[in-house]
Length: 262
Image (cartoon, rainbow, N blue to C red; front, side, top):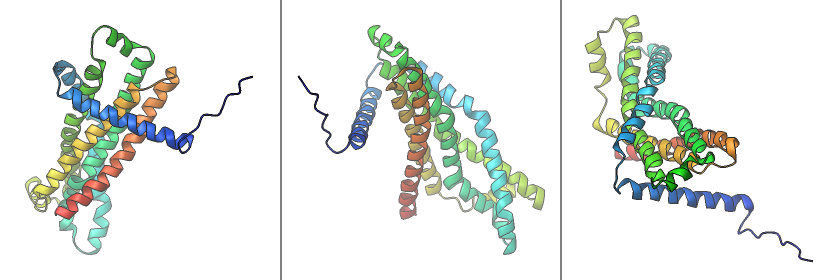
């Protein structure tokens, strides 16, 4: 009688699975950089995905950015008023929005809306064997589905980030104007007096890195989904959770690097 021997693990089942997943993710990223430089280029699909990622996110981004600028200004006013420094409010808000709030809020909103959508869309295509059908019909599904979406998020998230900053500053201006009757020109002159090129450049780098992270995580989770409809839900959920976790880690690293250069 043959007795099945328990499968040996290098460390434990969970730790081994973690390292295997990290290896698969690394190969997925390397494959993206290989495919993105290789023709043919799916320009129409990239433009369509830019529309899906950028234009369709505008209403939510606009509302969130405006409320962020308005509330941050309203909450900061009492603290500055205690020291008679309400005139510093435009500069304070501009520094906070440009350096931190605009990139982070845009990325988190996009991770929830765009990342989950990508994970669910590709996951449903995987479990319904549409991706396998594309391979049979001589279409490169990785280039058409993954490369186009990652490029779209990498391009559009920085643009949405600057838009969020602009809308946030507008919300802040309305609050300042309502309390101090500061003119539009005077407000923005004071606001950008303390903003340097390094602040704008570091925010741009954040937008690019965050956009790439959202796209590649959503595509990886959806492209490798399994177990039917349950797998689609898990792919969408994992896309959001992992993207947000990585965004916070990247935020810390970029802030440390930019502060050392400042």
